[in-house]
Amino acid sequence: MILASHERIMEYTRMGCWGSRTLLDDFKQHAHNMPDALAIVDPLNKEALLGAAPERVRYGQFD
Image 1 (spheres, rainbow, N blue to C red):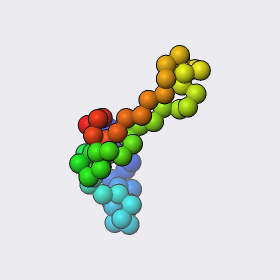
Image 2: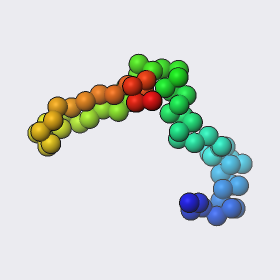
Image 3: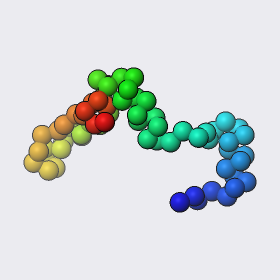
Image 4: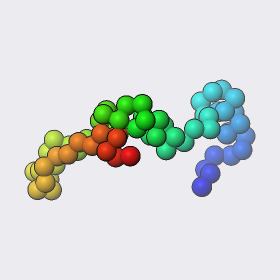
């Protein structure tokens, strides 16, 4: 779904704000370049909220 007008897309692309990379492209690059870096971290109060211990997932695990 594209929510911006063609003119807005062209303007932001010209200014260098937008490119052709997607969020998935960036994720895959991080997973390849730094698989041991933290990707997702639960809040410290997860156990109080949900009864489960907080978890941390690294890019390599998540990929």
